[in-house]
Length: 56
Image 1 (cartoon, rainbow, N blue to C red):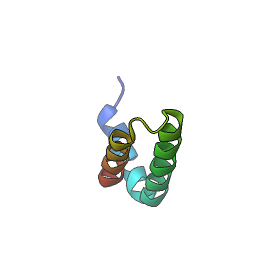
Image 2: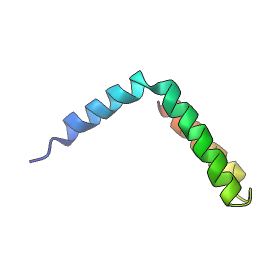
Image 3: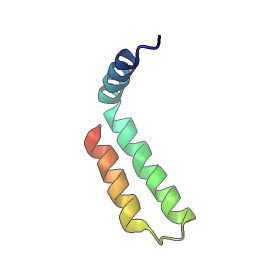
């Protein structure tokens, strides 16, 4: 049986260790997605990026 709790705990530990890298990657990804969608959904993309950054 797969230990999902253990896997999520490890992911949480990694996210805490690499918070700045995750925040930077989320910001860059948001910029790419915003460009690809022609800036039609900027508000939603920015909100998603902030949510990711707040959770890491």
